[in-house]
Image (cartoon, rainbow, N blue to C red):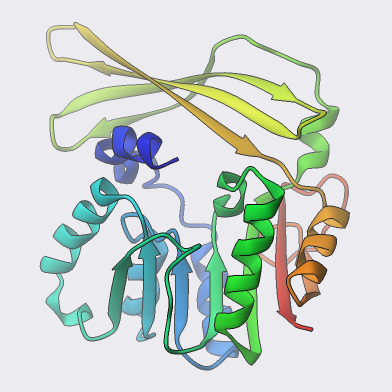
Length: 255
């Protein structure tokens, strides 16, 4: 996982510039659940900085130096946020916090990076130990149902295009993916084509593996970790979760 983000860190912010739909949800939850906030896998600070800009005290944990270098650069440009943000460069499965949090975020697909069940349970148990008795853990995942119901397609798919502000290059992001329904995993080759002013193309291919989850499995994992399902939504607007929902956003509490 870390190697993947080292490779794509230079594109991450430009690629995800339009990913803002979940930020209002985190603002609502931060206002509802008092105490500090922990952003697990905070990356370049997409969620972390948004919450700090709205006056919340936020901690982040991230194990990839390339992503954190970009976060460091942002924070140097916004010193007024430094008193609200602290970031640990560490592995969440071994790091220790001396304090507890009112809200812990496994934001956009973060849990999908934990492929093995023992690590999933270890992660959730650790987050449970950092959660206040009245706090909430948020897990934002894609709804696996529609993905597993769709026909297989190993064709190259154009995901999006974006401008790399550092180089001025247009970057076309494509993917080729293979879904293993038995293992509930998705093997993806992300293909970044950076187009220079003279029309030449520099291609970078980065493999990535993710794991899908269904709601009954999430409930069992939470139970093993001493957590209980509090609510589940079908999108960041907190709409109802059903078979056709785009997302599966889970709120969990201490059992």
